[in-house]
Length: 210
Image (cartoon, rainbow, N blue to C red):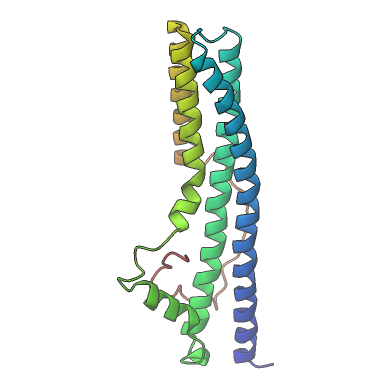
C-alpha cells in the first residue's frame, strides 16, 4: 500500500470520526437538556405557586432553592465543558483533513473540506453558523437558575436571604471565572511525541463546522 492510499484511508477515517463526534455531541446534549428542562420546569412551577399565594416563602424552602441552584449550575458547567471539548475534538480532525488535502500526493484529488471552508465564507452563509449557540446553550440554563434564586430571595421578603442569594451567585460566577482562567483541574489527555516527519498545520484555521 503506497503513501497516497494510506492518506485516503486516514481521510475516510477522519470523515467517519467527524460524524461520530457530532452525533455523540447531540446525544450528550439531549441528556443534559432533558435533565435541566425537567428540573427547571419543576422548580419553576413550585416557585410560581409561592409567588402567587401572597405569602412570603417559607424559611426552609429558600436554602433548598439555593442548593438546587448550585447543583444545577454544576451540571450546566459540566455540560458546557463537554460541548466545548467535543468541538475541540472535531477541530483537530477537521484540521488534519485539511493537512491531507494539502499534501502533494493528494493535490487536486480530494478537496472537500477546503471547498467547505470556501463556501461557508461566502456572505450568504457567513452568519448561519450555529456552533457557538450550541456550545453556549448551558449558559442560558445557568442564567435561568440565577433568576429563580433571585426571585425566591425577593419572595422570601428577607434581607438575609437576599444577601445569601447575591453571595451564592457571586461565588459561583467567581469560581467559574477562576476555573476558566486557570484550567483547574488540568485535563489529562495523553502525551503525544512530536514526529520529525509531521507536516505543518494547514493554512487557514477551521471556520465553524455548522
